[in-house]
Image (cartoon, rainbow, N blue to C red; front, side, top):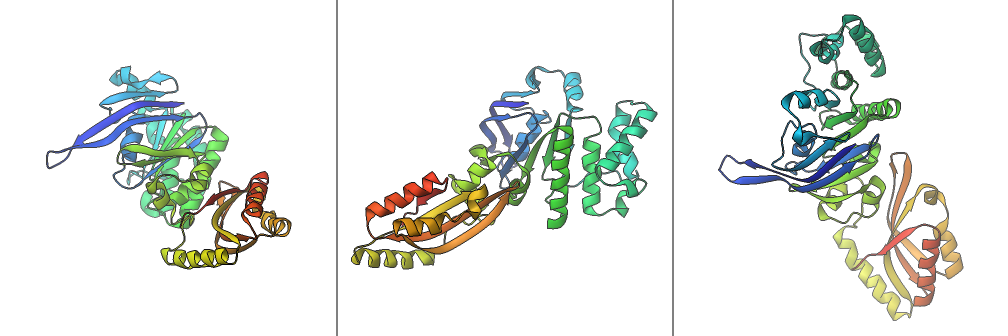
Length: 349
């Protein structure tokens, strides 16, 4: 659906220096998926999303949307394809003098759509986003979440094939954010529209996205399914952004205590290691560790644990101190974990 190849773009800073907003970015977004682009402020994610509809023309690289190369299009052709790329904004951008109905109708009016078609289409969109009772209200009479629903309905007015959401939930409270994301999921499911979600919040990615890329200093530093990125974050930026959602690392002060316990095990002739385990789906509720303990005589202490939901899939993480009578039984226990689809990694101390 969206193919971005070797995209680079720079801006001139006020002090005269050239700032690289994007550097050799390559991206493929599949039709019908909800795709997350996450990064801190200044990472380049908003510049990237503006190249998808060519509101920002990149200095280098190509952008294809639905098989069409935007680089070769005239201004008229770009204006036409942009009608099929809807945009949801952080600050709603509603016209205060127009009602809910009229704000949603605006893109259709600009396309000279017949009045009877506008009436039918807008009423359908108002029902879709759950604003039937607010049809004739003005933006000043709406809550933040209701205003964002108007913005979403307006973005859908021209039947887009792609919906770009640029920090659309960052101005909303947590409960309204969840409701807005559920609405976007419903739209994706019902209409099949491809959604590209720009955000700095891992909570948003966790709830709604199929795949995600992490950006830092204009580059993509990590990419994969949400489960892959949450389960095995590789880049420091990713691990830092995940810290408020999934706890991968114990507090530093714990490590000295763990080292002492491992040394004490070694003195007794036992074999101990610090392990980080991840469970997915039904594995979360399976008694894998208790079976491992009985079968291989491995004792363990749970030092840290967490269970999350990643787009409806259970995801659990445990940090344990495992102690076995000898190294052989320890490795047999690790093989048992692998057989039962439990990922593990030894934490280096």
